[in-house]
Length: 186
Ligand code: PRP
Image (cartoon, rainbow, N blue to C red; front, side, top):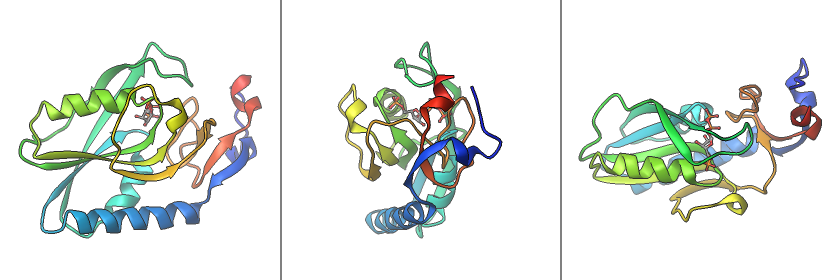
């Protein structure tokens, strides 16, 4: 891996600017607040990629929310391809039985991670379970999924920033950008 000292030089193109992301997150937060009005929501962030999205989205939601964090990792795949096998590195810290749950994801790619997570969390008997993903890459989908809230549909390009990594780097970029091939081919 060949990471430039100033990260931004490794980005070929800004796909979603900081301003575009902020506007979309505000819109999603308003929709969620309206649709769950009068209820209490449990936001389940799927680490690590969803960390900035979760932090921004929760502050755009005006109804009472609880938050919980899960960390999962796919294994057996490569840095750019997921394998479909999911391992739970950190589980929920509180029961979700009878609660309205919203899974907060940064990106849905093949859909394998979310497919696994939905089945796992449904087994804990929540009152309802829905999904909010900032990015959706439908071209890569391997399993059919209903995603209730989607920020942006993006093309099948390798994206980093706003939580998304390559080799654990680039998560702290404030925008979503397409990585230069030189950065991941080396
Ligand atoms: C990313 C993302 C989703 C998953 C989507 O996580 O946050 O959880 O991949 O891919 P899929 O639809 O093909 O299953 P990743 O495993 O890269 O971990 P990270 O969030 O810690 O970066």
